[in-house]
Image 1 (cartoon, one colour):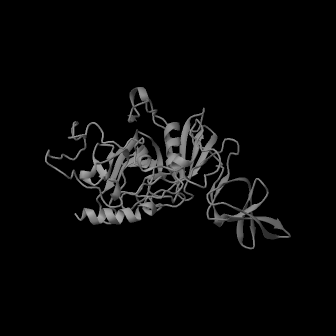
Image 2 (tube, rainbow, N blue to C red):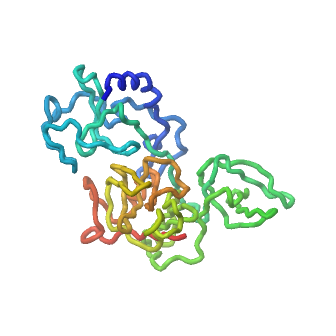
Image 3 (cartoon, one colour):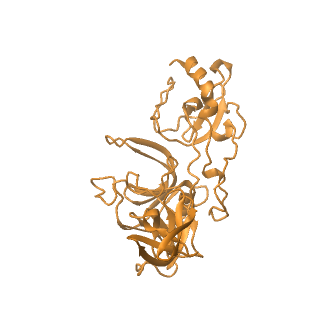
Length: 363
């Protein structure tokens, strides 16, 4: 409770602590929600009000000016005399809808307002702008495609029976392939549509399937997820339209009932939420993530959803859900059935909303 000492330390570290890298909100999107152009090199400047959900007006909100005028709407029941209305765990995540600065009596401390109306001191938070990574429309290039699996992924020409390095692809960039495969000196390589070659070990690949499932017909939308390649492809009937990297369960193809693995099979999304809370109190796997965005449940507690807390897409690391970058999660959410009506927070795949989109998860 040494508040004075804490605030002095915070004031010395504030500039470094509050620095933001390029994030999801810095990437321009078209009307369909597809990213346009390259990821910007610099983050759009944000003042302290913007980054904590405000609009530049740092006044104490009317419902807190003097006293709280609206009831506590959180699930935690705070008695009227309470100062602390529960705690959020260290490294836990939460969304914010507003911010204000208190007066001299409260040392001009900034507070942020959570989605359930509670207050968090901004000096106890670190803003995170989410990963700027995103997938790509593949309507014009089709399959197969690859994603560069490491920084400066080498591109080769094939000359005199040998591979000669010619160029490099940036990390997680999209590389359309032409389907040609060969082995050179014991190394498997695949050819891009530009004629250059890539080592299979350097890339994540989505192959063109030899046979499509029976539900891939008449433009029906479905989602295909490969656990081995960590790639998600959106399909409209027999046409692949979008591809991106994801993070599935960190235990790979294990038993979801016994390990942190993503279930395989064919499912339908049965409910969608703009945001929801995900947490776990299981020993060694505790986490608390509020306001997880763009959530699409397809089996029990398993969902496709946005992950604002990491930038590791392309590598298995989740507790069993399918993690997408915030940009990709928003696009998949808007593209997928059932539709969530404007101003609603969620929808179930039943009645007037119709069936949910098919999710096909395989090795």
